[in-house]
Image 1 (cartoon, helix red, strand yellow):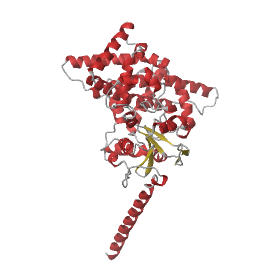
Image 2 (spheres, rainbow, N blue to C red):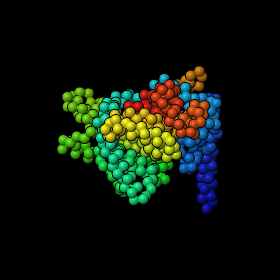
Image 3 (cartoon, rainbow, N blue to C red):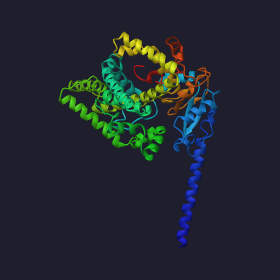
Length: 458
């Protein structure tokens, strides 16, 4: 009994000492920015500045956006995700250095949007360095106006289908939930153009494609929510341990879907003007190189096809759904703007024989201004991330951003800054006339990102 008490006392002492050491270690880590004379909000043990994010009281970008207003007089602010230092950029000119002028120092997004490793993690958003350059070069022809034009009939078909659905709901005297409507509408487009399938989510809430796709962005369980939040700021740790931050069942579903679609098209010599077909063409070109004994280190495999269909979902679903929802909301709030946009649409359609063609949409200047203003107030991406890939000295400063440091650019805060956009809460599409837009600072409005890593064909 006496021996047991001694053992328990020693264990208790060991736990206390371990806790003290961990606490002291965290407190030292929390001096990282102070030692570099970078201001910032006080971090809390052990969360740093993301306690409310982990407690699901804030979205991941909110602590950084809040710091923008509290420390606006400084060009950058130092925060912490747990013990990991994160530099938040306040000054648009400094953001221009990070995103454009000195892009070579910030090539990596620094985060993972998909599963770590094969089969779905190796898409354009996740990789950096030479691998990113090679893949971007391959995919650039897929994201051209000419390619989009060939795919447009699929989008128009789904738009007509969505219109019929909304007419039916209206005729039945029911209200349309625009959030639900645009989420399903966007997923229909992703399914058809990106994966070559009809998910029928507008009429079928149990559509597996829609359910799996929705879960890809919004985890159902607390476990996957926490895993995603932690891995967001420690991707290299998850990569080394090969830990997925996405439910493997989701990865498995989409990989098998792509694999079966590719096999069917090849076996039946079936072609379809969609994004998947463009990726299949890249794969076939790679196989030809392999058969000719050409260097195959840079070819395009089935795994690459699957990964980059997920890129299409990642880039096209939530961003489109969010923009559609808020555009409808703002037009409902501003009937005068809605009337002007509607008049323009009718005028352009009349010019094109009543057909909403690819060319017709490009002529709807005011409607595009409405969408641009929507994305200023309600950006689909609230922030941009970059990871420093080699030491970088801040312009006109002795401060060095060390290799591996995560850099955050609070898009939403910049776009809602009254010193940049007068009366920023007011919805005013006139801010984005073609004449004004061309003169705009490149880092005052960044809904698609900026620099070499911005969305392709933007």
